[in-house]
Length: 236
Image 1 (tube, rainbow, N blue to C red):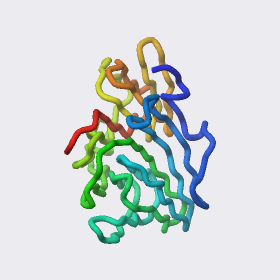
Image 2 (cartoon, one colour; image 1 turned 120 degrees about the vertical axis):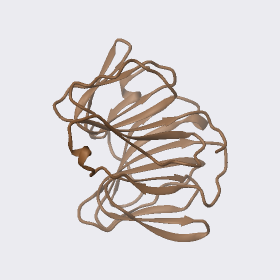
Image 3 (cartoon, helix red, strand yellow; image 1 turned 90 degrees about the vertical axis):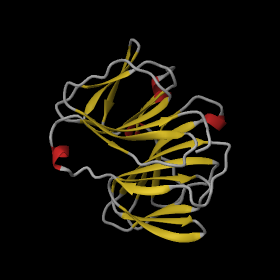
């Protein structure tokens, strides 16, 4: 991990860009690799009554909606389909599929967007839309929990989920394939070797492949984060 600016970021510390009126895009982190392997994370805020149409690219896009209400318009399997979107809805879509998100609710829609480039093509039926159920009785306790994403058919996205650490929890040092973490609630630290990075809600971090690291919950609330792991490109 070479620099805090490249591998750890908070959306409030970056300037927004836009691809259409009413849409703000905050770049969070990106991998320092050749473009074919690049992984990028950003926070997208869609204003009331506005629509976000991502730029097409060859690869995979993962979306996790943190707040707001709206619809996904997706040209899927040769059909124009609409899907309801609210908080804790997630989706993975091929980057070349035509799709957009429209805010039909009150207040802004906030969405974590993580993309990775691939060289492979995708079928019209690839991709899916799901919703996490975080309102189970056990989810109200200050206890460790993990809610896995149902992801199939991806080429580089290996999997992920929503992880909750109780106060005082600390991971052991570990390493794996490239990983994106986005902190939804709480505060803590990412420790990489002798370097510590402070994380607060809205922070994102990218840990490179085979680099030992660990996360620590330093607050009194749950340390809740979205985690996604990426490997080498392969056929599903």
